[in-house]
Length: 192
Length: 79
Ligand SMILES: [Zn+2]
Image (cartoon, rainbow over all chains, first blue to last red):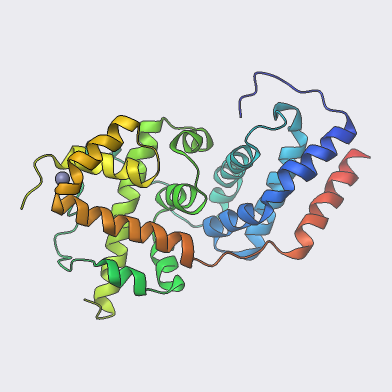
């Protein structure tokens, strides 16, 4: 992910890197894009733009390093710079991240239902997906990167250009928020 | 029963769950947290949510024409 060493690939090597290391991630990239934009056409555009940029800047990618994280970082930046501006999504969340770190239990005292493991396990994909989609994009993003894509904290810090401490606090908050959404959902469905 | 050190418990639980705990933290998890019921319950719930996210969300394959369209654009730009 660092650009300290610039590669000097031949055209043939470029195509090789592109096909062997970049294209295999297209499904993950598409799903990430779709979970950011909620629109198939936007997701396609975003992925396409990401791959074109990746090709253009291929010399700053070192063959054999973490292509997936590198691509996700480009996609995330394209989303912020180009897509978020156009869309109606609120882009800023109020972070008091450091202060609320690990002090944010019992976020909403009105939700008294205790969410149970069995309740979660009985939920269907759409229910969980709706809860995730209801989170502000920055919170949704850390959950996607960590829990769905399995990136490490360190990789996430590079993808998002934030310190690891911020990754962890944001992830912690995101999980609490998600839990609240799931709780509200569970009690509205009469789950106990 | 109340947890004696919630902040520390939660921190280690989250590290465990994400596979980011050091050996030392793993040990402290085994010694301390497994015996802390409030936190252990929370841990199970968090793990269940993580598993549901990993297993139940629908993943769509990228549209079939997407790769072709990307390759076409690259070829047009480089020739
Ligand atoms: Zn505890």
